[in-house]
Image (cartoon, rainbow, N blue to C red; front, side, top):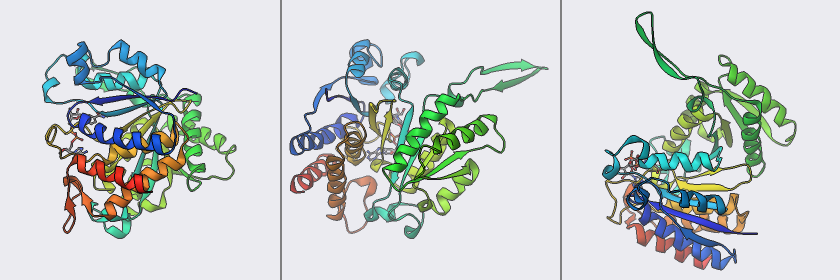
Length: 359
Ligand code: NAD
């Protein structure tokens, strides 16, 4: 079996955080005998500078050949004024759609050591560990027709929210599969009291549930889910939802944890090939200063080992190493609090490597 990873550092803090994640990946590879190989390419602004486009055909070809992609982040002021069709984020959207990455997994985990970083009361969020499974390639963001027209002398705009049975079934399966390897609880979020697409969503999710008798399935309307996430987020284990609801709820859930620098993500295709990246952007305000928190990217490596390469022991070890480093009181600026020791990007990465070495 080939085990190849394409590394795309991207722009801004991308190269800095990826350098630390690669240190951790290399050690895990050695320690757990994973047989992983890496190749490197460009995406976003870095690709525009080198190839004139945000995703070169040769890089896309590489991305198709490998089993997983590890991405830093793309974008920055240098490329903000260039023509829209070749902006950095176009490269990101293109690689996601060309690879058919329809399932976006966004864990929202609050390490107990960081409970003070949340804007919610520590007892509400401490130990929070939920996973949002968002459909990523369908729904209202891609539906047609969509347009702005003039009707009866006034402007009018419309979008379309289509979902086919097969699109719902495959994302529902991902939700159930994730629930099976966690606490066997799945909450499907929709707006079935109003939307036809949500009514089909609920029907299909119920049908898929028959194949997963061990999973406790519940349904929740999206407005209630938004409320419950800030009222009592620990009631959830896995949530599965459509593209737009998932977009909003996953950002809400990530803010429960208080720090964007801690949150990894995965986008998977039907064969668990995936692209793994931190949830944050390229943070141009701190780029090149050695201040960025590399932990979201390091935790993205752990997701990659877990979901694409089925290496749960190695993934667990990386997560444990991160937790140990937080126990030691090391913090980058974004998660700094009184009494802790502030460190830079490389020192944080080195501390995770040292902790992993000792495990
Ligand atoms: P951002 O996530 O880059 O930054 C928001 C704030 O969080 C900034 O103050 C930043 O310093 C801080 N921050 C982000 N990551 C951090 C980390 N690892 N450690 C410490 N602090 C961190 O969002 P933005 O400022 O809205 O966007 C900046 C650029 O990133 C834009 O060009 C945007 O298009 C791009 N972007 C890219 C992605 C992606 O590549 N997936 C996602 C979002 C934004």
